[in-house]
Structures are given as C-alpha cells and as structure tokens.
Length: 399
Figure 1 (tube, rainbow, N blue to C red):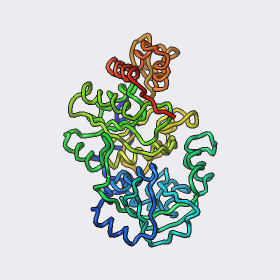
Figure 2 (figure 1 turned 135 degrees about the vertical axis):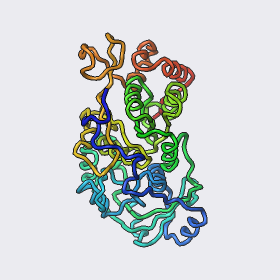
Figure 3 (figure 1 turned 90 degrees about the horizontal axis):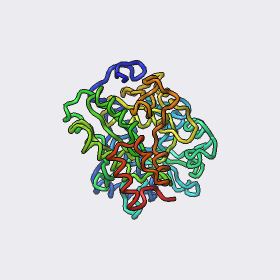
Figure 4 (figure 1 turned 180 degrees about the horizontal axis):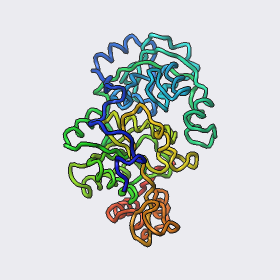
C-alpha cells in the first residue's frame, strides 16, 4: 500500500492545514445593500449562465483563490502561454466570462456590470477591466490538448462567443444558495481544524462509489487519518448517474461504513470542463483552498474518452508546482476473481485476469438486469441501494 512519503505518491512534507493558494483565502461576499448600490451605477445587466454562476460562486467564496474576479486578457494570455497567472502562480484552466459579440460596444473599462440570476435579480457585480477576444483553437490546443471537435470540452468552447470581459467581482452572500452537501472553503477548513487530525486527504469523483474507490479511501484513511470525499457536480451528462444518486452512495459510506469523525462529504461544484490533466490541477487548487494537505489522483483522473493517457493527470504534477497540496498518485485498483479482492498492479499473481472497476459497467449491468455481476464492483449496501433506486425509477441523466 503506498505511503505518503513515497516519491511516487508525494514530494515534500504536508503543512497543516494547507495554506490557501497565494497565501490568503479570498472572500468577495458582501451584503445586499452594497450590491444594490453598485448595481445602480451599472451600465449593463447580464443574466448568468449555469457555468458563469458556478465560476462566480467559486471565485467569491475562495475556491479559486487567489482569483478575485474573472480573468482579464493579461492573466488569460499568461495562462495559455506559460501555465501561470501574471503573478507567477501556476494555473492551468482559464476562468472566463463570455459575452455576446454583438454587445461589444456596450462594455467599457472601469464600468460596473450587474450580474443577475435566472429570475433577473442582481446577485453580483463585476468591474470591467478588460474586453478581449479568445482564439478557440489556441484555447483548445493548450487547455484540452486537442482541437478535435468530438472532444466535449472542445465542442463547448466552440459553442461560446469569442468575446470575454474580465475584472473583479462582488457577490451578495445571502444570494448564495448552497446545493446539497455544498460547503464554502472557510466552512470546510473549520471542520478540518476541529477534527484533530494532522493531515487531510481529498478524493474527488463524478461517479458512484465502487470497491476501487473504497480501496483508495482506505489508503487515505490509513496514511492521512482524515478523508474528504468531494463529489463533482455541475456537468450533467446524458446517460450518467444523477448527482443525487452519486451523493447518496458516498453518504452511505461516510455515515454508515467509515469511522465517525474521520470523513466529510462535499459537493464540489465545477462546470463541465473536460480538460483531463489541466482540470485535475484546478481540482487540486480548489482542494488546497479548502485546507486539504493531500489529493488522491488515480487513473485517468478528470479524463474524457481516450484523449489522455491513463496516468497523465498524475504526470502534470510530477515536475512540481507552486501548489502546496501533495499528490497521492495511486495505481488503478482492479478486481481479482482468484483472490476475490481489490488489488493494484503487482499485488497478486493474476495480472491477466484482473477486471476494471467503473461506473460504465454498473450502468450496463443495471440495463441488462445482470445484478449478480455488480457483486464484483459494488459493496453489498451500495449494490442493494442502486438496484432499489433503479427499480423505482430513473437514476440516470436524461438527454
């Protein structure tokens, strides 16, 4: 079982709790009266998209520290050219605010823009510091590593306007309605500090819990003493498990299986990015801002299709970075029918018979009502819950 001190798992020593990226946890929330006053002088009102809403909340609550707003042209170009913000900190995924190109004459530098929710109510403001054009080919080649239009991240970028505005934001704290299990970094840091643990490992996923995940959880609990499970929501993909179903499987683990006081469950809101290794880096940034000292990165972390190699998301951290969070680069857990156990490469004498563990096979077995095949992938409690939910109605995202 890997140890945190193993070079393949991490480098350096953990700092408890992990310092916010850049040294200070950003908090851009304010009261409604300030937002209302700023909105009165706004030259433009914009309705936020789902992606913009998630980014806005992550900026405002400190998930994206040290960012204090949507990226300006200077930071955007620095990220694309150097993989760094203009202040020198490593950053891999641009955080942009796209606007309709037909409205380009309605924005001017120094003016405030009112940002509204779907109901038209002002929830935040942005002071425009930059108005710039985004080359989708350059973006996709750098961030996604491909310009293949079949890549979902590439397709999303090409659907959006090339015009972006950037600048600092302020948002109304009372208008931030948390999703189920969603916690701001400050709250999670308080939970970690009160736990009494010395190190904190983070695990992130978009998939329901399976026995391979539990293997990784045991590694983290054994070596770090505390585990934060972060279910990534915000990208509803047709055919995948619904977010509530995914959260339910981990709620069962944290409340009924794992030792009390040693875990927390969090809903990590990220928009659909599909950037593989670069997205893994963004997740690491958010988790450091939440106070975690270690981050489990496994096979094909944040990957999509066959665009990235199995351990490419581990390799992006290998050369080091300005992040303090340490990477637990774990091998892929698989099921061995001979050992009737979860193993990794080199842990048993049956490498040719190992079976992969993934949510895709769970969906396939459920569709075929081949419930016995789930025994190799899911623990009995999770299996029974998933079967019951599937029998009672849809548990998958519809197209």
